[in-house]
Length: 187
Image (tube, rainbow, N blue to C red; front, side, top):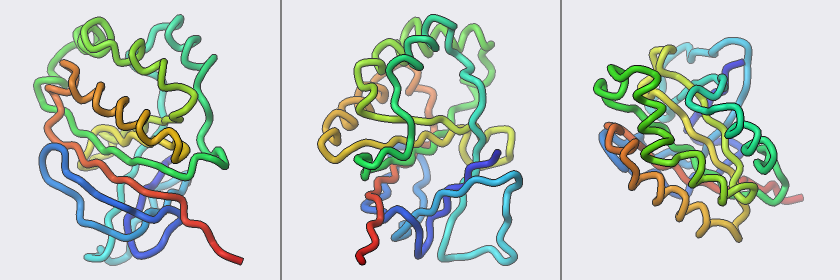
């Protein structure tokens, strides 16, 4: 199942900011739509008024069983009514990262950066899902999607700040931070 994030003129999320953290930015678009499908729908004509990022949810690559059990026990699902704030953070890591073995990446990811252990305290307030896109020929390796209630915005900022200070993030060569709020239709 492919998940498509499309920045454009309309969508279920109103974009409040698009900030380049590292590397080239994405053009500002006022809205974001999120759709799932069995295939990637390509536009008939590329648009100058939109961008599209596609990924797939996959197995947890650097997570060991006890860590997975801890995550499952405390994480919240996406789509909660109170989670009206969201962030899409596409990330591309350097070639140096991909030249490491899976075991070497795991050591940096968890043994040195404590990605999972440090992130547990932010759950269930912040729900998240990682989408892989490196093998799809996309401009990013991962699309990270977060949802949270407005009351947990500062907690989310703390989480992102903590992750960006880790050794793992020294391998990030492109990162864009897209923030949005749920579009509410009035009756």
